[in-house]
Every structure is written in structure tokens, then in C-alpha cells.
Image (cartoon, rainbow, N blue to C red; front, side):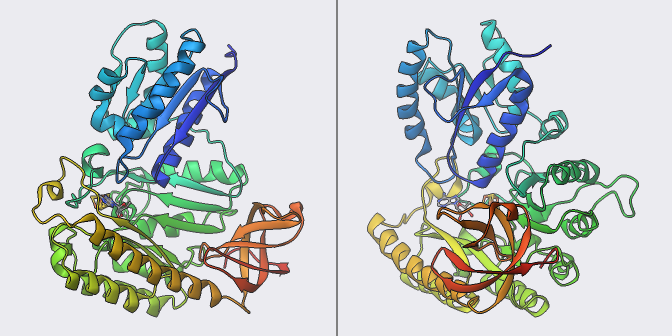
Amino acid sequence: MTAATKRLFIKTYGCQMNVYDSERMKDVLAPLGYTSTDTPDDADLVLLNPCHIREKATEKVFSELGQLKRLKAKSGGNMLLGVTGCVAQAEGEEIMRRQPAVDLVLGPQAYHKLPEMIARVHRAAGERLETEFEVEEKFDALPLDRQVDGPTAFLSVQEGCDKFCSFCVVPYTRGAEFSRNVDAIVAEARLLIRKGVREINLLGQNVNAYHGTAPGLEGGDDWTLGQLIRHLAKIDGLDRIRFTTSHPRDMDDDLIEAFGDTEKLMPYLHLPIQAGSDSILKAMNRGHTAERYIKIIDRLREIRPDVAITSDFIVGFPGERDQDFEDTMALVERIDYAAAYSFKYSRRPGTPAADMFSQVPEEVKDERLQRLQALLRDQQTRFNQSQIGKTIPVLVTGTARNEGQMAGRTPYLQATHFEGGEELAGQIVNVKIEKATLNSVGGKLASMAEAGV
Ligand code: 5AD
Ligand code: SF4
């Protein structure tokens, strides 16, 4: 049976996990005949996939839904409207109540059920709310096909979080930690490689808490992320491995050592610390001190001196005093980051921090964020400039904005552009870096590189 072509528009907001989820939803819906369109105007199915972590996502969703409701009316009711992701998980019932034009609401653990739910809506019967699903089921039920876009791809290996940082909604919306089996990961990696992927970014909310089973392999009842990476590195055709996002508490020696013994593992680590003050880290329930974090980074730099370190920061967590913030600034000076994300603390109702006394005034948060971001921008620019004069292997991802130029990524995940032809797309080439700005480096093609770093 061939399904008729239907148009699918997904609007994704927020984190990489959400971008990844949207891609998987497209994969799940492809067998039903849905192909992507980049406007909601004539779509048969519109899905909003918002992020709940720090944005005032809910209000944005409702205003978006108000507009979509009019489009839906114009379509004579043919358009289906859905809200997915963490917002749906947390506020599903509220969404259905406030905006009756919404046909389906489903949480991140249930998107493999999309086809079934759409069928149900079409028959105008059955439950419309679908947020309680076992994560195991999610991984198993996904079709083993992936649409790829260029030579790099995400591969989900772990879901959920048991850490319960006091500011964060993820443990409530994404559920408990769960790791995917090694054989399923290897199968998906091989599929991606067959489709032209050369760089895989292993994805998980707490990716270094990975503890999957590897049936038939040595010690196969509980593998660490380090073991998984070394195993994947044996696959021919896979040239670069990355992983994100890690937690300092799960940064074990084996994983740190992988940066020294596994050439395909890129010299780049995103390791959020959130704050530099131990009393704030404690109130955040992070389970580590600033000193422990510094030790991890120092050890990693001994093993892989050129490693690029990035992080996430929250300023203005409840109770953050001037001195606590100065501790964060000092920590940033001490680590010297290649890049980092920084946010003002935002209250998430239902999380412990939301009810803490001494919330920090908005203007204080603003001021602190500005100071922190100025320092981080300096460090990022200096990191990019430190590549000038070096010849670096760049994985070419596609054409650059400027005519005649190609774009790619260094091992340190820097956006790179250089003069070159489109035949280089998907290749790893050596680029001599000649200039650097805050957000990218640029240079001249030196030669075709051997695979890897
Ligand atoms: N307020 C501000 N930032 C937050 N993050 C998570 N929850 C909050 C919140 N309530 C940030 C953290 C995390 C990143 C993904 O989002 O820095 O690492
Ligand atoms: Fe949220 Fe903390 Fe879990 Fe990260 S480790 S997802 S910040 S609870």
C-alpha cells in the first residue's frame, strides 16, 4: 500500500534533544506518507515541539496555537494540530482545555505512537492525551530508518535523568534514566554510515551515565560510555565520535582516558557546571563541588592537552550572593572555556528551587549575566584565534553562506569556512586557519586529510 502524500510542518524550539525528537517524528511519520514542508499554511499536520526547560514556552505555544487555529479553520478542519515534547508532558491537560483546536498532545516518551494517534483522531475516537509511556518501548518501537542531512548525525543512546537538580524539569518530564542496548546503537550507527554519515554525536540527557547491555560481548551486562565509544570507534567509515551532554558526577576515569586512547573521539567536552560556588552547587543539588569539576578538567587536559571545554551556567539562582557570583567568574577564569551557554535562572513551578526564598531580582541577574557573557565571549574569541596558523582537519558539512565557500567543523566543533568546491562536501580536508572571530574560523584549503584528527 502506498500512502498518499501529506504535508507535515514541525516547529521546534529549544535544545538539541528537541531537534532530534522532531527528526525522529518525521521518520515515524514518513511511512504514513508525510513529507516535511517549511510552512504551516498548507500543512495536513502541524506539530509544535517546544522546550520547557527555561523559556516561557507555554504562553508562546498558546499564542502560536491561536494563529494556527485560524489556519485550521481555513482548511475546513482538515489540518491536524498537535503539541509535543516536554511542555505537552507537563501541561497536556491544560493545553487541551484552553485550546480545543488541538487534536493531539503527546509527551517525549510517546512520539512513536504518533501514527496511531493520528489514525484515532481521524476516526474521532479514543484517548487524545498520551503522555505516560515506558522509555523502553519508545526505543524498541522506532523504525530502524533515518533520514540523514549531511555527514554528521545525532544518535540517541540514553534518555532521562535521575539527578534532580533543584532548578530543572527534565527528571519530571523525561522520566528516569534509561540506556539503549549496544547492538541497537551499533545497528543505527551502521545505517547512518551507509547513508554517508562520518561523524556521530552520541546523545543523552545524561549521556555519560550510560550503562547499556551488550549481549554476547565481554562484560556485556553493563557497559559504560567509554566502552561504547571504543566499540563504535572500530566501525570502518565512522571517523568522528562526540557525545553530549555529560554530568560531572558521571565523568569516570575510563571515559577521561578514552580521550587519550581513542583517536576518533574528538577533543571536545561539553561539561556543564552551572555555578562556581559550592554553596550554590549544593542548593542546586548538583552532587559535586567546584574543586571536583576542576580536577576532572585538569586530568582531561593532562591526557588531551588541546581539548576544548564548554559548559552551561545559570546566574541568579535563589540565594546567589555577590561573592557566589564572583566564584563563578573565578571558575571561568580558571577553566578558560572554548565556548559556553549561560542563562538567567528561571523559576520552573514544581521544582524545589521555585519555592526557595531569596529569589534574585531581575536587574541583578541581568547585570551578572552581562558580565559573565562578556568574559565567555572573550574566552571564545581567544580560543578561536589560538587556531590561527594551524592546519586543522575539517569535516565539510556543506556550502557556506558566501558564494564559492564551503562550511565545516574542526575537531573542536568550531564553524569553519574556506574557498572550495561542492565536491568536498562530506570529506575531511586540511584547512590552514588564517582568521578567527567570535563564532567561526576561516582559512585556506591545504590538502585532503587522512580520516580523523
Ligand atoms: N533556569 C535557567 N536555566 C536552566 N537550565 C535548566 N533549567 C534552568 C532553569 N530553571 C539550563 C541549564 C542546563 C541547560 C540545558 O539549561 O544550564 O544545563
Ligand atoms: Fe536537569 Fe540536572 Fe538532569 Fe541536567 S543533570 S537534565 S540539569 S536535572
